[in-house]
Length: 127
Image: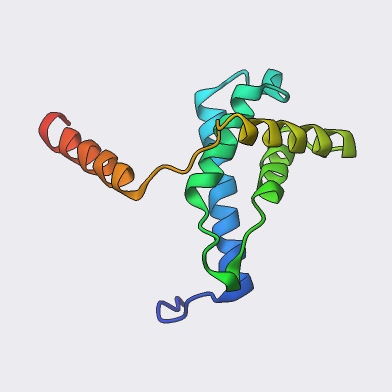
């Protein structure tokens, strides 16, 4: 039995969004980087993860705010197993560094729309 007319709210919606993002990031890393086990402390991988999270979580809604740093921890925990406090501190410091040097950026909505449209047209014309 399916319940199409029922939508998750508040904490359930937050968990649904978190799980979707974590699963998507995990799948992307595993698919695109077969040697991801060697990259646990790679700054470029952390930058990729942080930018995906930054551009897929909108914390403007006060009811369902999502802790972006906690998602980073959950992604890395899914990839590499349990994280120690040293690991958490390392990732937090590296993210702060990436923020300071402006490597984590929010992509404007119009650029996202253009990219989606270009991908759609490319598939229709050449796919």
